[in-house]
Structures are given as C-alpha cells and as structure tokens.
View 1 (tube, rainbow, N blue to C red):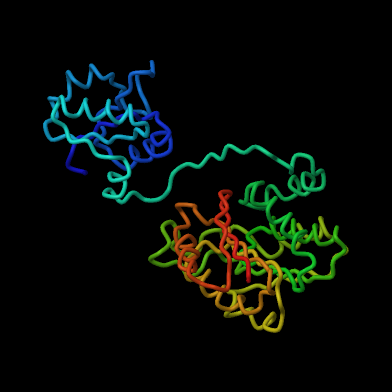
View 2 (view 1 turned 135 degrees about the vertical axis):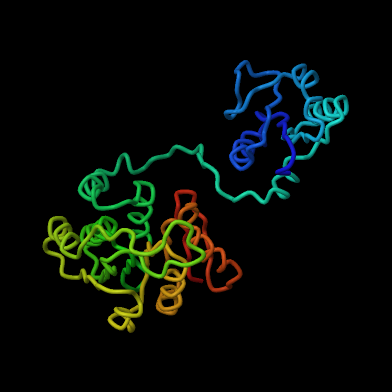
Length: 322
C-alpha cells in the first residue's frame, strides 16, 4: 500500500478511534479523512474532507485506495457507494493493517480511573522520597508496592536486577520494613550501565543508565531504611558475576529492569527454578517501543506451561509461577 495514495473512511468510528491514528503515523501517503459529521478542518492531523469533497477530488488520485474503518452496516454501505462512484478500491481496515504490517505500538489510554495510591499516605511518602532516584512511574511503583503485600505468605526472598539509582529497591525495602517481614532483598546492578545489548534491542547499544553508583543507592537506603539489615547489594553482571551468592535462595517476587533481550533471558533461565510456586516475576518496560527486546523475550515465553503471563497496560509483564 505504500505506493498508493490513501483515503480514510469513517475515521471517527469505534475502530477508527482505535486504529486510524496509528495507521496514519505509519503511512505518510494519507491524503484525507472522509467524515461528514465533524466540523474540524483536520482529523488525526490530516485534512478532513466531506463526502462531496471526496467525490469532487478523488479523481485526481486514480491509483488511490480507501481504507474503511466503519463498523455499522449503514456506514459500510455509505463507504461502498462512495468508492464505487469514484472508482476507488475500498479496503477493510483490518486487511489494510495486516498488509502494512504495522509495528504494534500505539498510545494507550485506559478509561478506568480507580486510583488507590491517592489514599495510601505511606506510598505517597515513599514516592516523594524516591522520585529522583527512579525512572519508573507511579503506576508501576504502585504495582510493586501491592505485590509485596500479596506475596507475603509465599516463601522466599525479594530480588531486583536493574537497580539504577535505587528508587524501586528502596520502595520495596521500605514496604518490607513496614510489614516486619524477615525476607531478604537483593538489589543487583552493574552500576556501569546496560549490558548485553543486541539485535533485538531497538534503542540500546550498551552502557546506558550509567549515571549512578553503589554509594548513591546506599545513601538512599540508609535514609529510608536505616535499621534494616536484610538488604544486600550485589555489584556486577547478574547472574554471571553475582548469581553464586543467591544460588541456594528461593524467591517470591523478582523485579527485572534490565532493558535488553539477552540479559532478561539469562536472568530468567537462572532464577526461574528458584521462584516459589505462586511467586511472581515482574518485567519492567514490557510494551515500550524502545525496549523491544523485553517485549520479544516475554512473548517468546507464551507457550510455556509452567507460568501464567499477564500483559499489564502500565508497562509491566507479570510471570506467575504455576
């Protein structure tokens, strides 16, 4: 379809609102969006034409096609009649998307608005304390916060690989202290940046996120959890350089935030036998277009029978051990 001029029919239909804008971003030859109800001059940043505009101007694009996003039968008839009158091929939107092989990334805006973190004063306090030491947003932080509570009766320790400046690790350590739990928490990082970047990693080449240090993490932890002695920092590549330290441990919650495919795969191969039944592995950056390696890694696991995988729209993937 890249050689054709493209018109969009019914771009504000239910299917259009989901797919049309994404289609436009992946196709620079969209001429106009055809809609009779809107009063705006543009729809999704392309010119809006009425049906009459389309009938008058479409003849200037003899090889064009029209992508039909309509879902109602009456709108489909309207789209079909328009295309027949000007002699332009009408293509259903799902066929067009399949043929164009669009990258499966588009803005997501869930409509649910329940926000329990707003009434949790402990979470709000810790969030303010760690905000400058994490790149993880409040939605994913809240999930880690709640998963610590939900896994508290599962035997095992807590493991985080990919600590950066310590924000998520400090949040989990504070929550453990509040719960008066005896679980150990292991925080693993090279402190020299991302490792094992490869062909599956769209934005990483290695060495990114090196703007941290073990000292920074230790200072944050000493401020938030000064009396806690069950926090262990493992410096080096995990598992090759530091995995030996936890080879005999079991884990109930593992947070993996390493950004690259090979690193994520090596970590899972090492820790999965050590995850307790019912335990959870949380992948950060699942579904982010700049962390395509993480998305591929998790997707590669979907046929395994020993885990349940949850794609959470906040940017996490959860692996729950069966």
